[in-house]
Length: 586
Image (cartoon, rainbow, N blue to C red; front, side, top):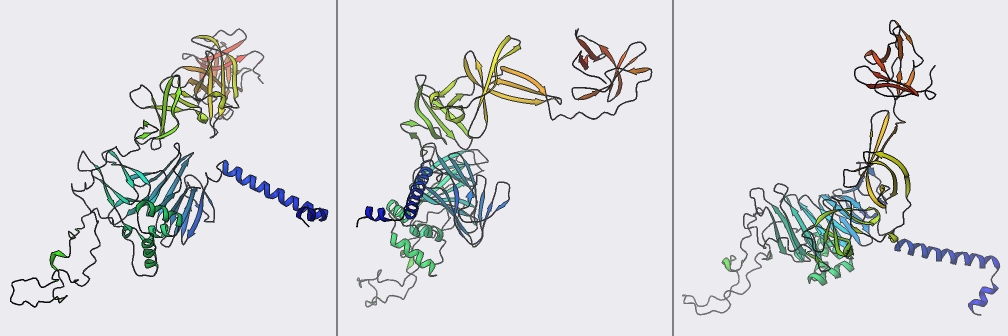
């Protein structure tokens, strides 16, 4: 009996149950696929592994629970105790691991990811190269490592006070800035190399120097070895790139775990410990005096007795007595100090501003000119280069990747096809009459919201929508609103309205001024204040303020046929305005 015949003979209830299970399975597969396509998994930072004492702090210093798969937010910090270890998946292709006694802070803004190492070390493994508009940086107190798709370890040695980086495959661009002189230099570090940063404050030039040397398997710390050996894919990748021996690396880890070696060989000395394997005298091998060459000595049978002199003179130790002088005087330039050349100098055939990463606008045409835009994460600024121009200049980014705008004038540097972007505009004013020094005109203001829920204001000028800057200020009872054309001092529209949250200072009802009688405006409210007006037998009006009674002028300087204006005499400051039929009195 085939499968179809068996299904036909099943009871109806079982058929329904099987169908439901099949549909549920299909839906689950579709959901997982959709989430993967939308980058849901890829954009989430999660805790993957915990050993020993681990602490997670939020951006306000509060402690978060350490539970499997807990999600990290931008601003969180991760710390490990003396027995701790923790791994975080920054997304599907980036994993970092902190060994014991380490601390790192996480910052994520869109596709820009930064990890600040404030203590200890961090091992990083990035399995895929980053996209052009994506950045991942690991920062210490003296250097920034721009990670593009590689593995390695950034660490700090408290004894020598040096930041260092070892790259185990791929390459990393290191930026170092001297805070005292402001000098910045760049260097490229490749798999199998280590770099250290030296900063000098006693000179004006070359205040930033790098010490770059090649390393072997023996130079790796126990923690780095464990990170490599426990991940077969990573181990194969590293050995293929560096030429290191896979079995040798594994044997090192076995020796450490069995107690044969003490480990922690991250030598931070600036001397190039290239041949630090002199292995102290393994009983003088029959070398120097192999055959009794006719030495004209009295005793010709000086046969090779291999020990008499355990100090085989300077021949057996070709090591230049590694004098541990971590402070490299002017000689600390073993490698020709890399200048700005090793920076990612070009991208798709065009040069890049130093410290910048290319954006989605690279070699795109706008108004007949090729445009290039890059992003500087350190300053959080965008820079543009137009074909034919002399240099890079700062540009402003429009919301939702619509393009970029010149900062010094009301025109676009690059504008994407508007058909690609559909916004839900909210109109604040539409054809609103407005009078200013230039006469009466109709204004229209609309706004759309970015992904960050920020409102971008636009105003209609000569048939074109331009971006506006919005400002508001409170003068107590009123709130004043102003809209300026972005990048200019031109006021586009302004208006005022009552401040609903304004509370007038309480004024106790005063005694009536001697010789006066209350008017109908006694106890009126104006501009949020209580108004008390009285009049004497000579028809002089007085108003009460905090300092006492003051003389008022009626209709002072203002013609108001349908009401009355009271101003403080001698100053023309308005005390009270009343339009007949609008204000009420007791």
